[in-house]
Length: 248
Ligand code: IPE
Ligand code: IPE
Ligand code: MG
Image (tube, rainbow, N blue to C red; front, side):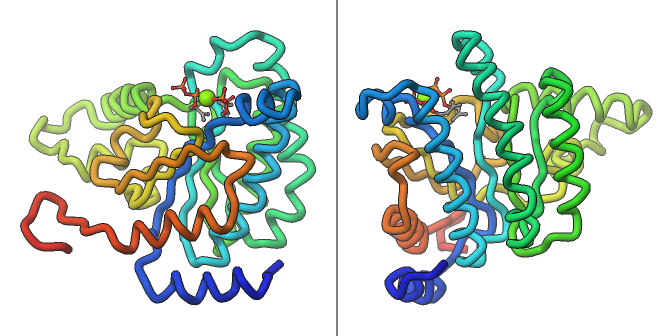
């Protein structure tokens, strides 16, 4: 669904640099709901709706990989009824959105430790990953029960089992990153966090080493095309030096 305005914005943005891999910390659902005197659950529902829009917009913009933070390894510490509501919401969303995701040629992958998720949710994840394997417009990584430190430890463990006799000097950064959950996507170019806090909250610690960071106080359910365009035009203006003197 294009409005004239959005179409123009896309054209404008495409003249600049579009990040290949965009990561988003979708924060502020609870505060958005509170401000509207609604239960936090209503904020999470609105958050899912927003993700549907944003992933479509990313596809239209030619972003190849979008990784979103949906549930952290620390989020289990929330009240049980919020946690179980979220798990149910992930289930219904995957079930309801499968058709649309496939129609939009979105390849869905879930990153994180899925073994702790409810069995039904694990099945739905497996199903959408399998069915969307061939999709090539947008790669959508959903970080679910994801923790950056957990990911690094998992990588160490998998590497240890895979290559017991590898000399230590063989473990280069490139080689190590093949054991991360994101082994088949490039590092993050641009990270957006909504909700006003300026921290990573254990998200993609390895992959954001040289990412450009962008923080907005807008709550995730209020994030819109203008906000995305503003963030991306700022990305275009950033000078990425990767430790060198000139922009590369
Ligand atoms: C982000 O919104 C979604 C999840 C962590 C699941 P929050 O639920 O953290 O919303 P705030 O930060 O409390 O407003
Ligand atoms: C980060 O948000 C996790 C997700 C958006 C899923 P949190 O709300 O959990 O982060 P903190 O607790 O404010 O750092
Ligand atoms: Mg939060």
